[in-house]
Image 1 (tube, rainbow, N blue to C red):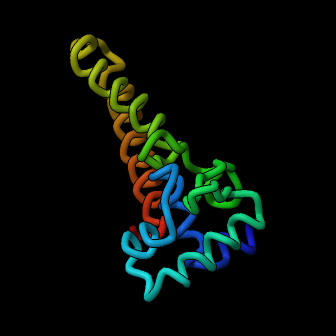
Image 2: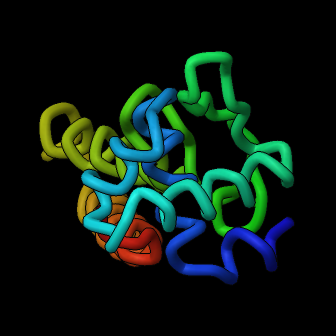
Length: 138
């Protein structure tokens, strides 16, 4: 599945759009991704359907079946947001750095603790941005 979807740029873009929208027609996909024709959108949607990632309803609309595979294992899909999992380490290190600034500025280990939490924050933020850039643009 990873090769058939993640290896095909437009098929992967269509699947990401479907993850964000939950349901869409071929025309909606074509317009949202600026594909050359609705037929091309249908081709990618049918390919996703054969892989069990979307299902076509009686009205001709497609509904996504969320699955985590390939690069998507590095992300959490929540509603319309696709967020790198490393965002949680960013939050943890940010809370630590702020906490050290507020509660321990006079402590003898303040400098070490603040430096380590700031380095962790910078590195995890860097990784989060790097992961987010892996996703195709809308």
